[in-house]
Image (cartoon, rainbow, N blue to C red; front, top):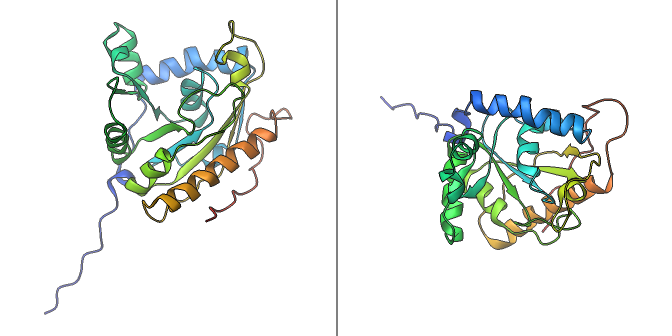
Length: 241
């Protein structure tokens, strides 16, 4: 008798999603919530685009040190980010950032090691955050995106979720002299499929699609109206060769 072929198993990234820890919930609601929602009059839109289960690469512009905690709070699920390894050895701070999903990267570690560590997080089901430029930008836009996020998505076979953080560079950007109480809003875009392959042209096409969508959402400016969760944004443009 011919044996029936067993269907392939789902990727590990789709089988389980880490649940928010108690520490994460406390920090999100007792610290980040009042800072974002009250101090900076924070608003979000596009939350219906966020996959609540399974791994996803969250890609965003980067204008401020405020960005990582704001993303985790606004998306409604923990977002894992790389952090300098020495931060994890600081009493109190280390356990807190670890509980919030941060993972250590040794100073001077090569790109391959960072990519391997981030891929491991995706295979555990995490939403893993990547700032496309890698460093904070004075104008808060995506200017010179790197292909690392697209490579992560290709390696793990998961989508990218573009997010635009509006005005964080004005609130607490590089070279500033303290926080400014300007409105900080977050627009969540539509997911982009992973690159067709790990070849550089495919990575560049996906990276460019993420850059264009994020900058287009930034161009819309702050969220208007009284709703915290307005209607769905227009669909993303597909990657172009």
